[in-house]
Amino acid sequence: MFITIGCITAEAQNHRITLGALNTYFPDFSERRQVFTGISSNLSVIINRFSMGMNIRYSFPKTYYGRCRQYAYTDYTEKEVWVYSRGGLFSMTYDFSYCFFTDPSEKLSLSASGGIGMLSHNGYYNTEQFIRIYGGADNIHLFFFQAGYALQMIYKWGNIPLFFKLAGYAPIGKREYNTFRFSNYFSSELGIAFPLIKSPPISQIKKLEYQ
Image 1 (cartoon, rainbow, N blue to C red):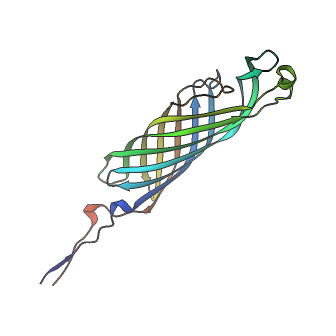
Image 2 (cartoon, helix red, strand yellow; image 1 turned 30 degrees about the vertical axis):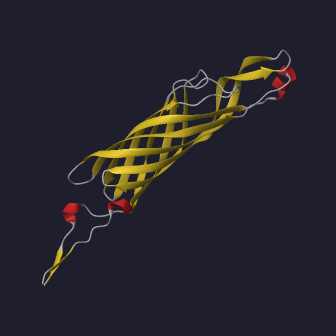
Image 3 (cartoon, rainbow, N blue to C red; image 1 turned 60 degrees about the vertical axis):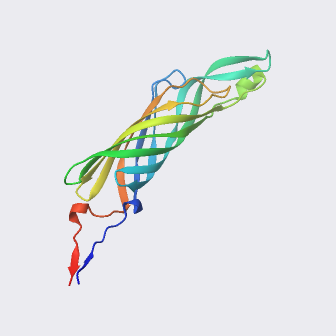
């Protein structure tokens, strides 16, 4: 009697974590071009060529010059004033991706993805002078939902799996009264991908036969 045993790790058990540096570019962020730098992380569950992931990004606070909106209690109208404000960005995105190319050596893979998420920004500045002038003032609060798309590359440089990602995002949420104008924006990420559980390629799996 022949018994054939094949050992294949289920693809549904494949996970990958990526950690990297982040640059976020706004063509129009309160009527100015702005670049925020920070860090990014992603946790993906891989099923064959498809994956589902959660992305968390944080950009460090920076000082920028922009136009904010103030409600004046002195004449009950909205005012727009220029201020130096300081704040960072936090975003979270859920996406679905598809690996459309893998070279025979499996050193290089390319994926395309799309997803939805949110972005939050709090900008702080000296509100004391505006309280004296207008009777009140609020710091800048920016929050919106967004749709995103991305192209990602993973390349195994020796034993180190590097990843590079380019993404674009379109705001789909509403602004609060004290926020400012903002545009679609783009981000780039560069870092290391860590496979937690990785099965070997199908071509490398050997069958054992016992008689």
